[in-house]
Image (cartoon, rainbow, N blue to C red; front, side, top):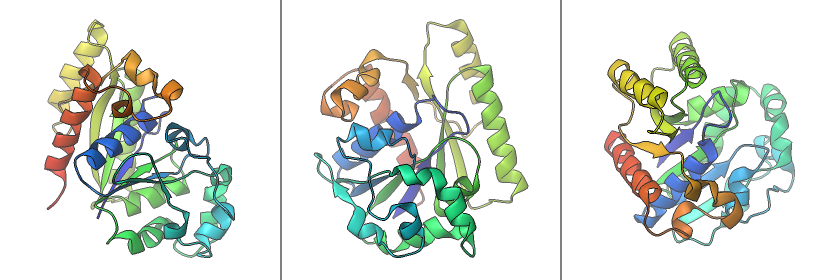
Amino acid sequence: MHVLAVYSIKGGVGKTSSAVNLAHTAARNGYRTLVWDLDPQGAGSYYFRIKPKIKGGSKELIAGKRDLDGLIKGTDFDNLDLLPADFSFRNLDLVLDDKKKPTQQLKKLLKPLAEEYDFIFLDCPPNISLLSEAVFEAADILLSPIIPTTLSLRTLEQLEKFIKDNELNKLRLIPFFSMADRRKKMHRDIMINLIESHPDILATAIPYASDIERMGLERMPLGGYVKKSQSTAAYDALWQEILARVPA
């Protein structure tokens, strides 16, 4: 089992759409896949037409009174399951803070699922918090979407510094471009410069495209309503790059 967290300090960078579409791509390629929607806004759950609700909420979940396995919902897609969000996740920092070894709690919850799934995608809320630190401990890879803008670059630098300062040596940070518009010179220039300065960044860029924006109307992953487009090809290529970085 490999745990891939799709995370950014900054909101509005295509984090949830990327988590959902990459998970769908993995499942379509035959991998047993789970998405855990950790964002109290529940956008990932919404895309799968599943109500963002967990009985007992975050408190019982972190307390160990609810097993993850019993909360998982099937989706309309083969090999793809969802652990839905709950609005109580807004209090996850407080709930974790009451536990011993709070940053180890998500890793502990995910451990029993090791035989059931090949890949687990964590759709994470933005900001750096105690929940974020728990995500960093649970994840094998941190996939960080980057819009080619100055502010987005700044958040990448902050994230890199946090990982270094906290000696999260086992966590592999892999940035990738999201919502990229190659018609804009600034986007093109930033992408060229960032690839030169960050060799770990993935070469494939997810475009700023209307078919991806339609996910909110269709309420499903991109590949559920578009069979072939520049966007679907980008996600397929991005997934192959990620696979090449995943340890055997």
